[in-house]
Image (cartoon, rainbow over all chains, first blue to last red; front, side, top):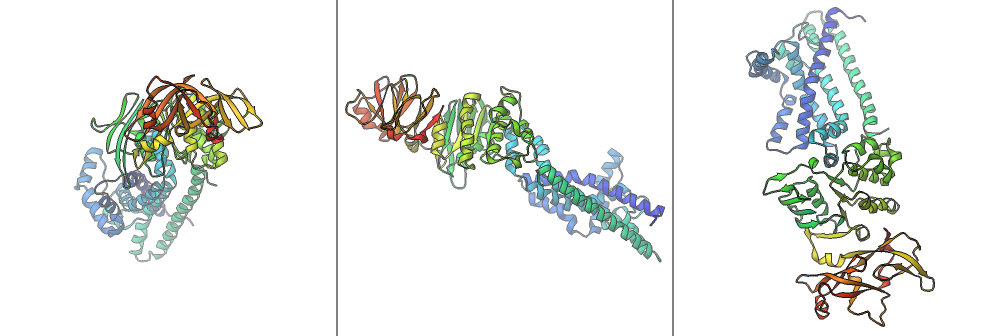
Amino acid sequence: MTLSPEEWTAIVLSLKVAFLATLMCLPIATGLAWVLTHRNFWGKSALNSLIHMPLVLPPVVTGYLLLLAFGKKGIFGAFFEHYFGLVFSFRWTGAALAAAIMALPLTVQAIRVSMGAVDRRLEGAAATLGASPFKVFATITLPLAAPGLLAGTMITYVKALGEFGATITFVASIPGETQTLALSIYGLLQTPDGDAEALRLTFLSMALAFLALLASELLTKRLNRSVLGES
Amino acid sequence: MIEVSLKKKRKNFDLNVEIKLQNGVTALFGSSGSGKSTLLNLVAGLETPDAGRLSIGGIVLYDKDAAIDIPVHRRRIGYVFQDSLLFPHLSVRGNLLYGFRQGAMEFNTVTEFLGVANLLDRRPATLSGGERQRVAIGRALLSAPQLLLMDEPLASLDMDRKREIFPYIEQLQGRFNIPVIYVSHSVEEVSRLATHVVVLSNGHVSNESNRFDRTSVLTGKAFSFDETYGLTTLKHPAGNISLAGHLPISNIPLRIVVRATDVTLALTPPQNISARTMLKGIISKCEVDGSPTAIIHVKLAGGEDLAAALTRKAMDELELKEGKPLWCLLKSVSIDERWIASA
């Protein structure tokens, strides 16, 4: 099976978008997971609900909200454009942003579960040995939560590969810029005689998702061995 | 000198402790739920007190009124937990070096002392309970603490493992000279290890049980054994100490633990009495509170202290006061091998 240049573009773009989405999502999700597992504060439930919003909102709503906030005239959009020269709307970076936001609840959840399972007393022990809160986080919490981090990374990546609703609303479906695999399939289904091509891409995206999940499974096994000395 | 004056409200009791600790090993003794571990956590900074003050050697670590609360990682207080809490993702070496601070202690000295030098590349999961606890002690020592907290370090170990670890803890004080607070509810551990005993009950320092749990440590060398009666005699500067049982005759000093309630005092060497041990000394302090009992501290010839518990009435009738010379009588049968350790 050979791929047409358009198909290649869509695949490469999908991978690129998913990669950037993961890069954006992971540190934020890690920080949020840490806050949710390690701190008690007023409004924690509200924060938790807010994080989970993209999971329950219709994706089109999330996409529209993104457009309002990160569009050229949105407050964040204007801010990033003015200070960093970064434009999100109708760009592939915007597709990544949409995917990152959509994946955030799942990523936070995955990291949170394994961070919550880290024995807090180990962190206390590290502190008595002179480790600053940051050192404790970097040398105890993070390594012990590594399986969850890896799971979180994979979930973000796979989720971002397939993100559709929020993406098409926020950045539309521009070939070569924002038209990822999922968006291409949708576009083809709207075209007469596009069915066969759509099916090809469907198989392709299944293969991609499957490979990512398989890689995650193998990595998790290796990680458990090396982190916890389990065999 | 460690000054502790801390308050903390808990669900089942209010902790309110005021103690001054000298160097040496202070045993925190008390039943479970008496607040021992809470107190250690407050001292380490792992929990925050509601009020009070804490200072070590004049340096204030916590003072509610002055709004001082030095965070855990800057307190330099080592902590050995009941269940070791070794970092599972690090090797033994990684654990030992985690908090390493350039200090009086050499890495090799500590690992050899604790017999863990051959375990350095192992993972904690592959260690026995005793090995794990030795690594935990080493890890704490190598962080060069100014105070070492030990929370029932032997409680999770079986008898054989306890025997394995005990000598290390016993020698800790002599080798590294760090003040230790040792939490335990084993009378044997407390009496063998501790130079001071603080008894906690319901979150308070309890004088009542303190009096009855008060023990003194005497050091002597076994020099003869009486086959007929099965008695070993120990040489002590204040007089010979007679003990039931056969102890190896050697030059290694032995420590025996004497409960204050097992000591009888006499102003003149008594005749016709069953007690086989008479030690000469001078009263250094009479401790009385409102209760019927008093503790008389006697400085024995040779310099060791012996505490005797008796009624305030007996104290007054014998006119016991500081500086008075007297004899301390011990019943040989009140000291069995549980109370003897090599020094």
